[in-house]
Image (tube, rainbow, N blue to C red; front, top):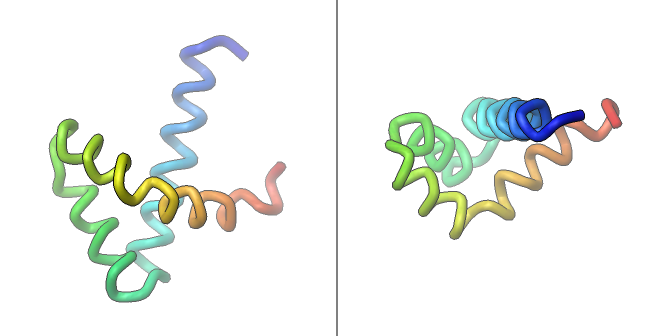
Length: 67
């Protein structure tokens, strides 16, 4: 897999996790996902730097059966 494909795969994984957060997460997680979808690139970078662990937890759940 080349770098472009790997980056695309990570973005799809992240997007799926955020959709799950928005739909199934608690009040904080769902609002964080909503903020993510409303944010520009710089604010997404900031959100990722602080709350990336939470996004990754949802990504791990979304992709638990895929790997």
